[in-house]
Image (cartoon, rainbow over all chains, first blue to last red; front, side):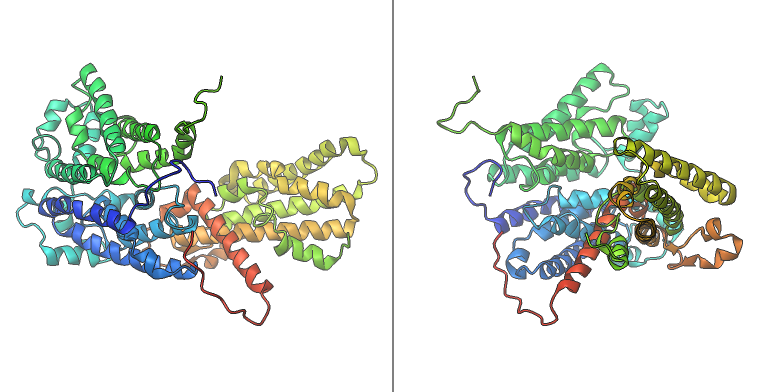
Length: 343
Length: 227
């Protein structure tokens, strides 16, 4: 059997790895709930339930033992990451379809965990965004910005009612995301400084979003310090995003968004620390990880600035997933005792 | 090769289905199967071309020199496609407008040339006719199946636009399966065609496996958890 590099490696304790990922995401989850209400918690529960059920069914269909595969927690990670990407008041079936698609088409049809070329959570998200653009773009402003914010019961009612929402309530809470606002307003030739004065922007980036990103950054740094994830990919993603946005910001600060705003908007931090570092779908060599991460950062900036979608982490990750086998092929480290360069 | 009508029929419809087994003619298969009626329309057009070209190729198989047989086959296929295209433009104009470029592109459908070369040029007319009919029906069935699958998932209806093909009296054919369906865009977009085709091929393989299994069920042993 041909493995991809590195050929010798310590076996990672998968359940521990996945558990650590979930635990370090808790601060981000609490920040998210604080700013955007209980929606994400409800979606996460729905997502985890769907993931476990789908995983069990698929393992049974594939004649694999259920218990050891369920216990590796990878299904839960997929659901948790996907829940972060779904608008908090989206209907329940969005999460069910997304997670089921991620588990079935993203993972098990390729042969299960370890054989999937694409990050399952991002595959599920991209599928949802393409299939249900209305539901998937119905983001809300932070709950602090309106007077009677929906409590847990309201949130459950909104998510679980499959009919169209009460338009009065719904109109009051849906709002374009900061990145979306920037994109449309800049498209209307608006001045960047005027746009940033709108109430949905906070200290560094979008109100609420900036603090979620800070919380993710903190959790991600913890993962990195504990050596659960390598530093290469997050640093390469954020570094290339910073450099790309920095160059264009220096050229024209009136039309190009500042690097700080880029780093603390949307899914930048989540993508860099938790999505791009997926041990299965990311590059495995040191040089490869840097290239992989840089590719994600550059693609994210490109799509965010000139593309059709306001945020681009999912597409950037999926595109670089496609390139991973090639990156690994060309960045094989020299094996000790063999010639480096062919003469 | 022992040719019989039975094997020809079985090959065309199932065992050697142009879409599900040979994977030929995928371009129209993937491009026009947004609804069942579109699939059926293109499938029937292909069927007509396939039958006529197979019969003609079989008729001239002893006259045409082998060196120039491919250009001759192409001329025959192209003529029939042109005829079908003009007929559709005249009698099924709305459907013609929807299918657009994919009708003239039937010429390039490799399953047609493949049947002419591999079968019709080596067999007598009655066999060639049966083969063309069965392969065409198999292809139409595949287009209809994928079109139906994508239409149900994507629009929540079945046989939408039936009047385009069968006239106004066929409006009743359109079935709305799910009222107030919000649509599943992925099924209508090109990725949906690939995924749908993959799923149907998988389904066919499962059915084949089930058919090939002996009646007595073997004891399924526990599969060890090794990857």
